[in-house]
Structures are given as structure tokens and as C-alpha cells.
Amino acid sequence: MTEAIYLEVTEKAEAARKAKRRVSVSGMLKILGVSRSGYHAWLKHVPSNAEKRREAVKAKIKDIYDESKQNYGAPKITQVLRKSGEIISERTVGQYMKQMGIKAQWIKPWTITTKDSDFSSELQNILDEQFNPERPNTVWCTDITYIWTIDGFVYLTSIMDLYSRKIIAWTLSTTLEVSCVIETINKAKARRKIEEPLILHSDRGSQYVSNEYKRVTANMQCSYSKKAYPWDNACIESFHSLIKREWLNRFKIRDFAHAYRLVFEYLEAFYNTKRIHSHCDYMSPNDYEELYRRVQQNELLMAG
Image (cartoon, rainbow, N blue to C red; front, top):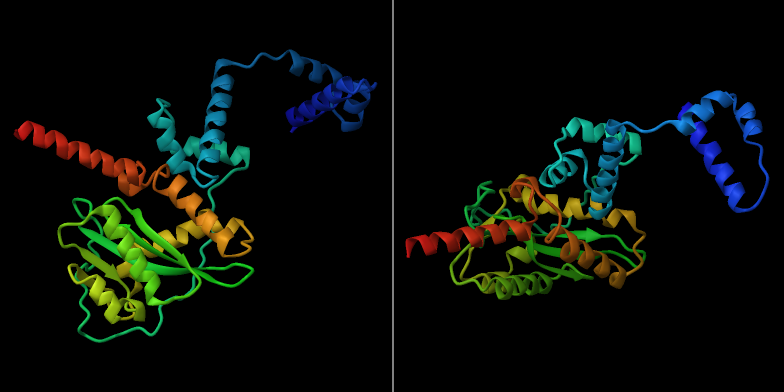
């Protein structure tokens, strides 16, 4: 507490000096109830090596926190620090963050966007909560979530590759029509250049049981969440909560165009490219898939 008072007095004295105004440091110290001798001793204090390192680490923590769009908590910041060569515990990082007054974003929004669910027994759950495929383009999952704007709701349709948790395609729309789902699937197929059949998992909403959906997924194995059991699609639903918690809920979104810019910035400039994920061994989805490709190439070279 006393150090904070000393710092405030120093800042006010410096500001007065720059403004060429006279100010009584002794008077401020007296009003604040601290001694002149203590203040002058503090001014002459030389930080120890431990103090210097602590401040340097705090500066790194702040940089990492800001680069993560102020989303990372102590676990992820610790991993980034360790990759840069720092030897530090998660507990210490958490203590420093508390001292600095920074923390991860945490708001859990929830709503229902499943329209007219089909509970027929013909829809099979092929995925069965097997969320960790061994290679990309084995299992995709898809879902729709709402985004509130001043002009009214808009809807985000996303497709995730479960191998890397990468969002491989997304579409923002003003309706929940099946055409938005079809557009997203076509984007995913074009970007991933799929040649082999894969599993595409979804809930039982009307968009995912329509004839148009069945047509565009004819070469895929369609998997559906069990009746009244949302955990089957947990990964993509978790992502939709994440984008709101870490990014969208900070803004008073005006309209469709504003929402689109925000979604684009989060997905294309952060989530897929920079945001580290515990599932990906604290790499971004893009880096995790690139590592897979390099390993496959090396194995082919060795086999040849």
C-alpha cells in the first residue's frame, strides 16, 4: 500500500514538473500520512534481480494476454511462457495475473437453435462420443448457433474437423434455412478436397434431416446425436460457447455486417491460426494439422 502511495506521489510530481508547475512533495506526503525519509529511501531503492525478473515475466504475461485478445487464463499463458524458455509454474502465473488485475473471459451463454427435431430411430449415432480421430478429415461435426444484434438475430453455421478442432467452414445468415447448412458443407468439401468418405455428425434439427442435406452428404456417413442428448455434439457446441464467451459478448453488435466482421476476425485471425488448444498439445489447429502433415511426409520418405 505504501509503495503505491510513493508511486502516485512520484507520478504527480513528474507531471507537475513537465507542466512547469510548482508542487510540494513534502505536503503531499504529509497529507497522505507517509514519511519523507521512507519516500526518499524508496526513490533510492535498486530493484533486486528477482524483482527485475518478476517484472519482466509480468510484462510477458501482459503481452501474451493481449495477443490472445485478453482470453487466455493461467494454464495457457504458462504453456506459452514455457515454450519461450521460461521456467515457471501455473500457480505463479495465476498469482501474477491476480496482482495485475487480469483474468480469462468467462460468460456461459445458452439458447436452443434446433428446429423441429426428428427423434426417429432411423437416425443413427455413428460417432458415439468418439471425439479424437487419428487423422484429419475422418470426422466432422456441425451445428448452428444464434448471435444477437440490435437489428435482430443472425445465425452462425460451423463445421469442425474433430482431429484438430479447426473450423474448416462457416456461414453467417439471417435465417435458419437449410440452404445455409448446404452452403457451409459445400465450402468444407471444396476447402478440404475430400476424396474419402467421412463421418459428419449433427443434431436432429430439421436442417440436418432434410432431403437437401441428404443429397449433399450422399457420399458421407451421417451421424446424429441421440434423442435429448446434446453431449454427443459437445465439441462444436463448446466452440460456439467459446466464440461468444471470448469475443462476441464484449460487443454491442449493430447488425449483420458488424457480426460478420467480428466472426471473421475471431476465426480467421485468431482461433484457427493462433489460439492454442489443450487438445492440440497447446498448438493452434493450423499448427496441429501442419505437424500431422510433416510427420506423414517424413514417414513416406523413410518408407521410400
